[in-house]
Image 1: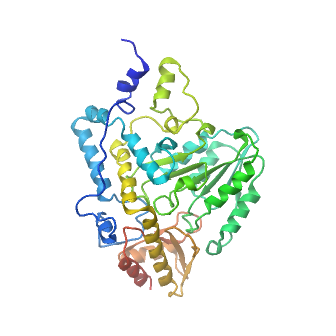
Image 2: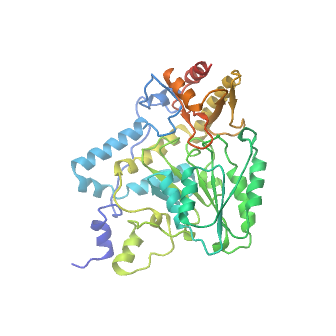
Image 3: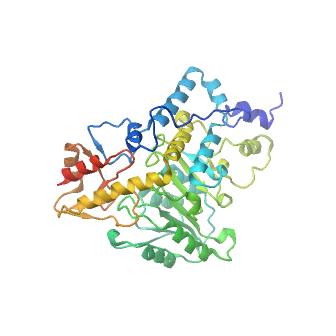
Length: 419
């Protein structure tokens, strides 16, 4: 039997890229869930009511629609593994479609990964960098960005965007990025929301500066703006397509409350990246079977192949639909309301110094307590039924994050515990 490319795609890839299969979407709206009622939204989360949840962003709980999708896929795989796998041939397409509806742009812009760290590692390993080119990043970025760039082995320059995070301004941060750009800059690696301080970068304004810097440069000489968005996706009101960046990387298992172990890379300059791992896409298999060139890199070619925790990956669509049902702007506004309620409460505690700017800080609030180690504060809050975290950086601070899973009463309990 001739081993044609189509046959390999249909049977050899175990249905992952098979044509003609359908997987009907399950609507988010169901009896008992009112996305316009915050109490109903909170009821979708199985979080214990014995703990005030101000660290749910670390690793998200699954809201009911996501949990049900995971269980449905898991049951199907357990009952008839190959048959169910084959029947879900377009499940990843549906994930991309739901993501594109939320992010803006096209489904073809989106690669699928397992985490922010995986996405950053794949992206910074794959970007085409010529001899003599370098990377501009900041002192404030997280381990995953710094280490991914270090492991790439190219020259990296770091700029300091602000001296005091509480006083950071958009103009100052944009100016320092602009000053750091040189003719050899190939990557500008930044983080949308700094999890050490809650500072939210003005990505659109930075993108405009990078675009001006790139004016009249050939594609291979342009600086690519790459954003770690894990503490912005699912809590910031902006659509990704409107930010102006070239690539955006995020896990979906934090503020988006998506399935654990899932992530995305959104991009608009895929031709400037080489795939790092073999994909299970049609062009990749075609290149292997009959030597047809796969062509320029696409999001599908960039997406690592292999077998994944499919029940979680396929359920990412439900996470985006859940957010869409509530409304991206409403989620952002609700989180911001609680952030302001926390800040107002902290202002009445003399020992507390808030390190997060008062303007446009997404969902994180980071602070110091005079005379107390952050870990001791977090431990004492835990003893009072409040979940908080310590920033995993050299700068140790107490960190809390209200969300659609918390209430005004939770905020008041947090402030009372701190007092």
